[in-house]
Amino acid sequence: EEGGEDGTLKPAAPAPPDDTASPDARKRVNEAKKEVLPRLIEALKHPVWLVRRQAALALYNLKDPSASMALAETALNDPDLRVSQIAFMALGEVSSHAMDELLRKASVDAAPERAVWAAYALARRGDASGVARLEGEVLSADKSLRFTVVWLLGHIGRRLGAPQAELVSG
Image (cartoon, rainbow, N blue to C red; front, side, top):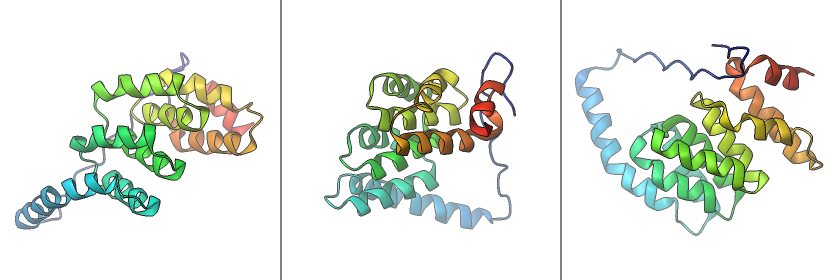
């Protein structure tokens, strides 16, 4: 839903449950998830960036809140920004309210390349506190950062308030 005139964002509506799977199939998926989750979290520390990125992507798809701390560590500290970006995207889907404080701090204090992704993760959860950072970076001298910010604002989508929607469309 669109944000109000006050610039607030509304969280994305949760996806409707997929009731087409049999209880047995759901049980097998949950068992497999329990087995693979620790290995994916461990893979976030692998020496090869592509392995770390794919682990973050798998965790993004699993949307399991128990991975939040490992994803936050990766998002804030991974030496490869491609890995960090996917970890921030995953945090936008699985983050807890306790993790939101860490994301708020990162959206203010982190280097711009990470701060905009932290702001995006917050916005995906309906927290507009980082949107000002995104708005400010639209005017960055760094063309790549400007492009990223517009892309991120576009992916926040209908949850943008009128001023942010104008930034994206203008």
